[in-house]
Structures are given as structure tokens and as C-alpha cells.
Length: 184
Image (cartoon, rainbow, N blue to C red; front, side, top):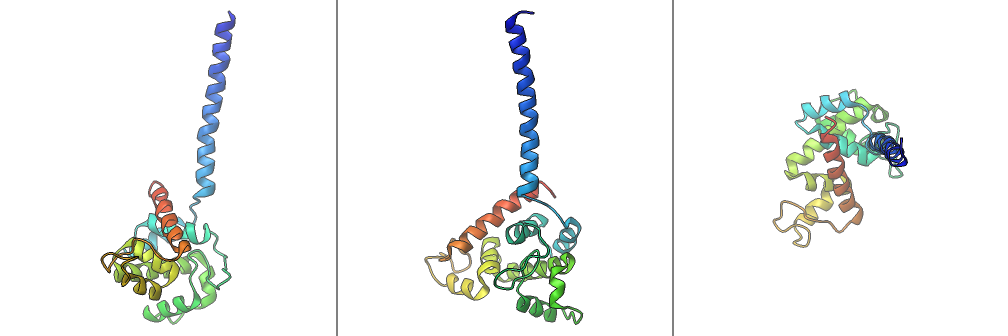
């Protein structure tokens, strides 16, 4: 064989191996950056609450990166980072006398109450972005921002908030949900 053919064969082999590593690298990146655990819990509780599984997974990814035992500095617990007071309020609304705050570290319980809360907020605000802002910054803040034309041109939906962290959170969940749409 002449040098050109050998060089072409080596180049083709190299490109084939490089291509394989790109595919594997993308897969590994996707698994690391967008993990998906507790699929059955998400499907069950998203379905019960008429929520998109991808939307719920996006919230979980943004809140805890699918770590069930996370406790925030502010005291939020579990996969969907629920505050104990919010979960107690939800349990009372659902007439769940068996609820215990420490159960929020169990994926099934956390996803159940996280989905209940998302459904409540979505029913109240009718818009995913506004719902996510409320999930992150609280209903009181969102109600105040909805009456301010700097944040809400129509009094029903938010286009931005005065909290950079909340704006970033809403964008992050929406981006994550788009990735999770392919996984569900």
C-alpha cells in the first residue's frame, strides 16, 4: 500500500474512534448533568396531578439533582426541596393524618407532596413560569410582583422578577424539562 492509502486508513480509524468517544461522551454528560432516578414515583404523582413528568423532573433536577436526602440551609427537605411548613399545610389539605415531616426524605412522599404543591400553584397562577417563580420565591412575593408592571405586563404572568436567583431558577427548570421530555 502506498503512504496516502495508509494515511487515509489511519485517519478513518481515528475519526471512527473519535466519533465513538463523542457519542459516549454526550451520553455520559447527559447522564451526569441530567440524571433520572425515581422514574416510577415521578410518573405516578405527575399523572395523578395532571403534570408533565418532564416538568416535575426538571424541578427535581434544579432543586436536588435527584438526591433524596438533601437538606438545605433554610430547612427544605428532599428531592423537591419542600419546606416542612408547606408539606404540613399540604398534608392537612389532603387530610393525610399519617404524614410526618421526616418522611419528606423518602422519595415517594417527597414527590407526592412536591407534585401536590406544583398542582396547587399551577391552578392558582395558570402559567408554568409564574408557578416556578412561586415555587422558588414564595406565593407572597409572586402576588406582589404580579401587581407591578415592571415584572408583569398583564397582572397574570411574570416576565421577570427582582430576584436574580429566581429568574435563573425558572430558566434552569424550563431547560431541564426540555431535556427530560426526551427521557419520558
